[in-house]
Image (cartoon, rainbow, N blue to C red; front, side, top):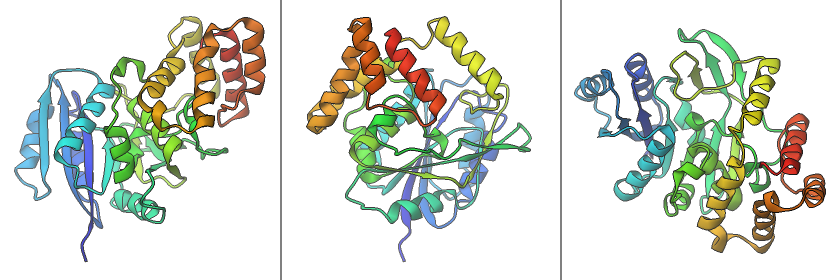
Amino acid sequence: MKKTTCLVLLSTYNGEKYIAEQLDSLLKQEGVEFHILIRDDGSQDSTVNAISNIREHVSVPIKMLEAKNSGAKTSFFELLRIASNEYSEFEYFAFCDQDDVWKPNKLQRAVTLLSQEDSNSPLMYCSATQMVDAKLSPLKVWPSPPRKKLTMYNALVENVAVGCTTVLNKKAFDLIASSLPSNTDKVIMHDWWAYLCVSTFGKVIFDEEPFILYRQHLSNVLGGQTDNWITKWKKRFRRYFQGQNHYIISNQAKEFFYNFHNQLDEDKRINLQNFIQMNAKHRLARLIYAIHTPFFRQTTADDYILKLIIYTGKI
């Protein structure tokens, strides 16, 4: 019986400390035929040499591209572009970070759940993670399962998808790769963009069971949430009052609308346009919109914060 095919998209940057352990866990994946496509984002350490040494001794096809540093977000979008040109025959596509450990059935679990849905629709799998410290000692399971529907009305204002857990079916991959953002500076993160695209035109599945050890350490390029709630909210308010997150959601919304407005149904197109235009409205209009907005976040506290940001005109 022919195995399902999957392409693993891995971006690396100065990951010499953990890359061998991550690749070892990838090579132990069960029940799926897979290739690994790596884009090294200008590492200055021995990451490239470590990958080259591993490639020589394994049967799983591993292709590595060495590139100039552009940041993790742009690196993953570049991987999507390359994959669409050279690996379009694969059935599934998985994002992968450089410093985690995958359980042997990680890909198989995603493929199994996705295969139970309509294959003619864009589909995306994401899951909780078992957060661990640098030595793989358990910390906590994160994130919590979403409480509300995973639709465009959530995805425009909040990301529930942890990138390194994400697996796309062919329809979802084609949807994203056929209309990559022209300006990645306007996109918050590649996994958020994928969640927004697939939730708008297809279906997103969230798996409450973790199949990845999500390593937290001092040199993480991307990381999870290990702070307690007090520290977390202090950081969020600090970023807001320092202006770090002003307009990032509306900028991403504008880029999404530019790319996909012709494919949106009328209700989604109108609601997206209203959202994009809201920052420029007067205060009373923003207040009324904040109260009645169709867009939502998963928790009550975050939903109130969303309404506050809409009212201040900084969304």
